[in-house]
Image 1: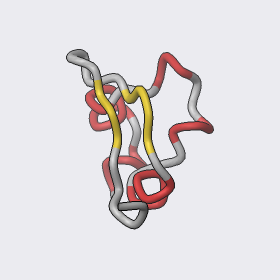
Image 2: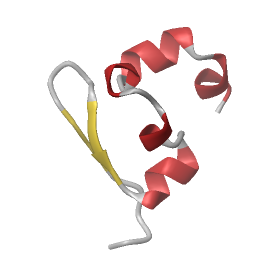
Image 3: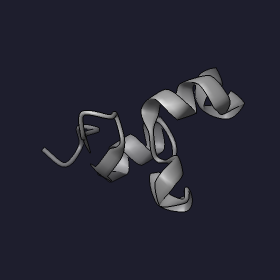
Image 4: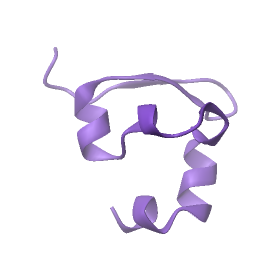
Length: 52
């Protein structure tokens, strides 16, 4: 199912893996430093992520 956005999270909501659909829908997690790939952190501290 390559056309469906998907990602793998750990219990702390860190984004461990994602596909192209998720990158297009949310953000390019590969462009973020590894310690900033957290959905909770992005939701509260990143204005661009919250605007989506």
